[in-house]
Length: 178
Image: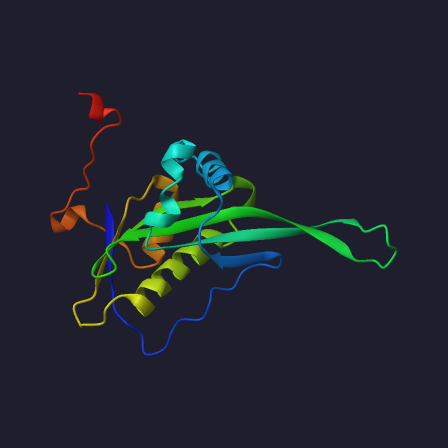
């Protein structure tokens, strides 16, 4: 598990820059898009029942859409309908006081290497800086980093927790039936 301490900046950070056609949005993707993003990005697949409480029980989330102009309308005005695809997401699980866990960081493979994961992570961290209590102790921010995400997280200030004596642990899937 990686962790980072977040303290307030004097001014809110600007929204991360995105390539043309991409839009960062606060909130959570609809359940089918959430499930698709997780599976396509190589995260453990989940069911609709598992995805249903995500929006209600998360502290904050954001996602990125990509707009592609489709065929020109038949009205000969040259206008184009836009079809939006949800291509990236991330969310924070936490108590809103001091503990914040970043989860569900995912970018569709065809949209990777464009800075979208970095934009999602920066937006999540910005939200913590702007909304966590500012009592001088800082927020405790954690995440589990898979191999492909480690460079991104390190670039944004995360360090491995194990050297400081913390080791992420989990119950294996199916533990409920034991």
